[in-house]
Length: 358
Image 1 (spheres, rainbow, N blue to C red):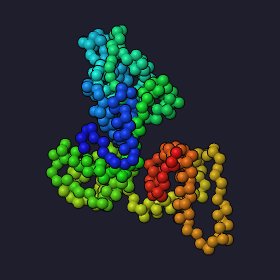
Image 2 (cartoon, rainbow, N blue to C red; image 1 turned 120 degrees about the vertical axis):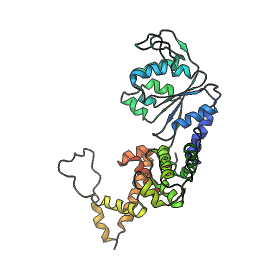
Image 3 (cartoon, helix red, strand yellow; image 1 turned 180 degrees about the vertical axis):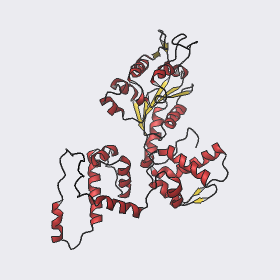
Image 4 (tube, rainbow, N blue to C red; image 1 turned 90 degrees about the horizontal axis):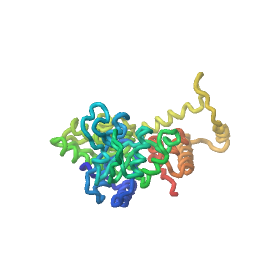
């Protein structure tokens, strides 16, 4: 897997590739959205590679540079603009002339600088720090963020007019937990890339149970975390045949429970549902759910009740209802159920729940 290769044959990744193919030949501004570690820069490099731009792709991480330095990094500065500015220096906008400028983590850009970026996009010119002349720019702008920019607009942290300028062609990258079917291919490609970069000897071999453990894990760090785990395996187990227990006990950051353990944990978690909150706990102001007192009458009709199965069926009904209410948006459904997004994804996999077709 080289630095410009996107690995995966899942429906989600096929959609990403389709959008890249559509957008790459144009000069349209693109906004790549995805969680940390999903491969936003890989997508940006693929767009540049497939475009007709003859210049280089120039990248800058807007969250990695102090706010007071970011303006001069983007727009450059004139000689004498500030102490230490002994000669004129071009910024990333000018360096990307004829090519692509990739603004990573644009959602973290300070508000005052957002106004200057908006002006540059609209006028296709920039002004160096300490200068007054307009410098024309000819580049393709690709932006990326892991932030929920719409929420940041509501909170006054991001300019709505700038968002409309950069969100011309959005590309959403799925999290690794949403495309676990791609993990075997990704692991194979990562092993090849790691061997090439580190000159390792014999590489470990992952059997089916090990791959299954990879596919069951939630990967909060996405592909970046998977790469670290595979490289760790190359160091710890060169030439070894690795099974699921090796992956669980030695490689994963958080041990993934086996199905029986997971079921017992869910059962234990429901045992306290009828207990009142402890003294001093925060008061819940929202309307309470209907109390399930009618369940007491069930034994008038049934000799026995499979409680675990019934609780699972209740979960399935509520999850499907939350997904339908949120038009299939997993994050919103998770909020409705007061679950972490990754927890809801795991439950959807476990109960074979599909997002509703819109």
